[in-house]
Image 1 (cartoon, rainbow, N blue to C red):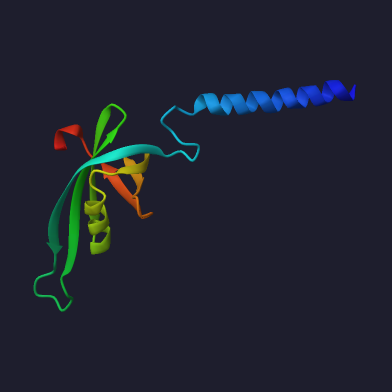
Image 2 (image 1 turned 60 degrees about the horizontal axis):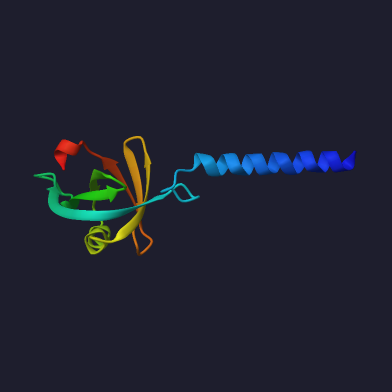
Amino acid sequence: MRVHTAARVLLAVFLSYSITLAQTSPGTAPDGYQTAKIVSVRQLKQVTGYPMSRYPTVARFTVDFALRLADQSICTGYETPVLDEVQDLVAANGQTVKVEIRGKKITMILPNGRKIHADLVKETQC
């Protein structure tokens, strides 16, 4: 009796593990991230300020970059006031990164470990 119960438990564990492996696509890592290559990075500096105000002007940087994921190109738009993030993105141009796409949002892990959360844009805006 115990042998049959143990065999059923092992079979259930094996089946659940094989189903999990089957659901993961070949280009997807177990943590949910896929690998992609940054194809191009374009930096646009955009300054937002309030004229006639006592508050200082804050520089915001707009960075557009394209990724190559499997057979498709993905274009993103990213806006930040942090210059280090812009420099890290420019330095990662041409390198392989980890990406996770959920809806119209993309999370990217740069080679130096920095996480970038960007928005996907239409392919016509590439």
